[in-house]
Length: 400
Image 1 (cartoon, one colour):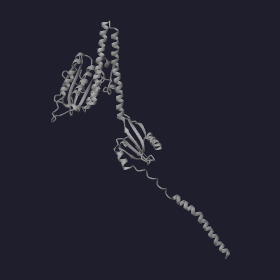
Image 2: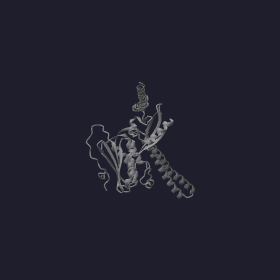
Image 3: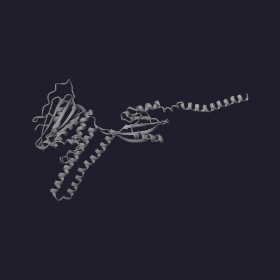
């Protein structure tokens, strides 16, 4: 009896020990098998904040505490700031990390290189967005603003240089006149040079005023329907004296009835500058031809010379302010380097374009293309008349 009781008691103790030993292990295994709780959801973007970001002109990107992009504006997407749900630019990602660390707003200028065309220049501002750890990145495309600023800075520098030359020359010539007051021949010689420099300075100032006006004025303010034939005639007449002095023959012809809508004085000045440029770069006893014809809904006004021509490498730059293909020749003839720039601005203001064809030693052809204005039903287009005494080849060059 005692042996049986002892045996049963021992078995019970063994089972109890096994339960105590195995129970915690099973409980531990079961605890490890349970899935981990999900991470806390990212801080929501309030409706007010979303509405505010939507009306901003700046491109915007909102990132959470894990640097995941929660919201991207179409502008930021177009600029390529986001890729795979993350900021695509390491510089921006680094700036976001710094802002998250100390909460300070930071700014950064960036450049996005492009394989073709001008690089995109950006201005970025990174700041905390509320108390949820969100960061907002605001980006503005400053490419055009920087380009305008560069052009303005270059323009001021060029103007300063161009004005300095005749002013310095006048100062030196005045000293020379004072030092040789008892020599009438020297005084006359220096006085003639002073007159020439004064004329050059006056021309430069007038061109600067004209350029400033055409850049700032809206041609529609003084717009009217203008006969192209009158524009060609007036511009040609303004250049007859200088052309005759250089023994250059001016011939012109315009298709009758052509109309354009715009500022008469600006358009006349543009054609005048083209003719003056042709006369300036043409050798004596040659011809400059001015022609106007219709080409569908466009009026083409061309000025063709038999001059020295323009090197191919310079064709894309001849309309830049103060750019001269031959600086020495321009200074000798009194050119300011602003005439063609004025032409480009006038034509652009009127919704047109200007182009140039040229070959060294064979002359040049500048062509204005302006929208044609029609008062009534379209009329049958007559063939373009050639200037009297000159035949035009297909590319517009006067036949030799």
